[in-house]
Length: 107
Image (cartoon, rainbow, N blue to C red; front, side, top):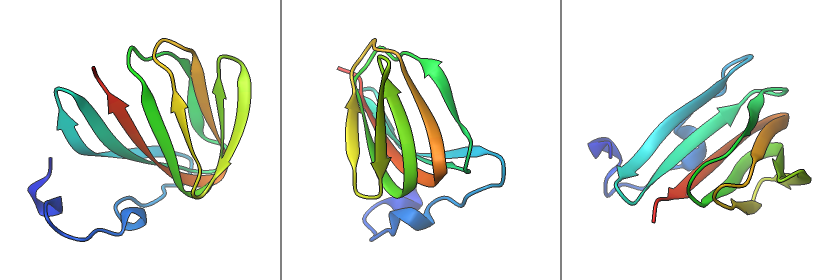
């Protein structure tokens, strides 16, 4: 974990800026048991279908996203969250620019 983030109040939306035509990320916490990462997706950007060996929770903190889990489309916007189960295929697509917190639990 970055020491500058410890024990201070943080506006999570300000941790990462959007970049035109890109997906950017910033890892906030890395432990053996899991990670917390902030992502910012420009409109139209995404992550292609893939799987992960661990459960992961996505929290949308700005904008609007489509998250497909095992073929089921889910539309999420600011304030929404979804759990992506381990070993199930999932993909993410920015319906508009959005930021999310990804919490992955490795146990």
